[in-house]
Amino acid sequence: MRRRLLRGPLLRDLPRPVVVLSVVAFWVAVGFGVVVPALPLFAHEFGASKAEVGAVLSAFAGVRFLSALGVGRWVDVVGERLVLAGGIAVVAVSSVLAGLAHSYLQLLVLRGIGGFGSAMFTVAGLALLLRAAGPEHRARAAGMFQGGFLLGGIAGPVLGGPLIAWSIRAPFFCYAGTLVIAGAVALVGLRDAAFAMPKRRPAEGSGDLRRPEQQVSDSRMRLAEALRRRPYQAALVSNAAISWAALGVRNSLVPLFVVGALHAGPLWVGLGLTVMAAVNGVVLLPGGRLADRRGRIGVLVLGCLIAAIAMALLATWHGLVGYLLAMVVFGIGSGLLDVAPAAIVGDIAGGRGGTVVAGYQMAGDLGSVTGPLVAGWIADAAGDRSAFWATSAVLAAAALVGATARETRRTPSGELAEIG
Image (tube, rainbow, N blue to C red):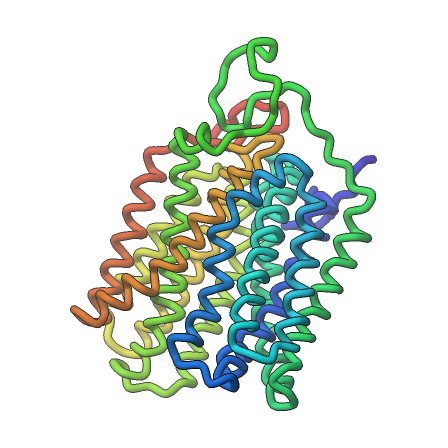
């Protein structure tokens, strides 16, 4: 069936499944934003210590990281839509059961199960998005998908506060409800979507110049093969680096830095993070269009360098003006890194590559886990500004890896696009 396309200055030619998946991402993120503030309070009701509360929060991310590669293999075997639907169902059921939990252990186990479902959804959803979007608009598709998560993440806490005040268990049921909406949108919106799998084709961005009859017929890209390619390495490193910066610095150190070093109130923390999120959202689609028209690698390198500059501003510019400027700059850099690396992964994976997408997801999760730990350790040992400089160096190193990579953007005919 012919895919219906969107029209508009930045959304022109985006396939309908991209819109559907972006709406699904929004509702998933709304529910997640509702339940996250309730988790520490709910665990505390069971007499959990601070370390045990942290374990509840880490269980979700830890299981998601450990299961991503296996989920990627499932995607290659049974297809993206089945795994995506199953993941939404797993998280919804685990959320309802978590809301009914009567002990800390039950809550811990159920959050871990939810992390497994989240891995199913995120890997399958991104793989489906990158396959539905052609090479000429893959970066914009990634931007729209990330925009769905961003808007949902903003809306979720707004709903979560009143729910927590009413009942500490209510957010878990609300999360399940938003997941039901997400599942219904996917069921209806993707039911007529046809994604034809090529019988014989080289992976996009592979640089394989052989004739089709000389190429392997299996269209699925193996993770081991992708790992040997510098563009994929650049995508992994940049995803890990920006996740390190976002979780290790923006979410962990910046609030403490603003209150402790800049002697400002929590209002300034929220203002800076809100400004950063707004700029990030504004950059997504224009950044995606830039990557689609001018190439992924240049946008990746630019995003890493801009984010590195933001961290350097935090380290050198004293005062609230410097802090707010750094948040604006970081929003620009992170917006570019939300689109270019994902588009590179889609180019590399070609027709299908669940494990390739899973590897990319794992790199981001690894950065999210190590960033808070390493940046926090540096801050304790040498101060916040040293942690900012270290994070800037990590981002600059990611830019260097990207600068040595070959462009992967191809035209619809399969030829490498002219860049310049």
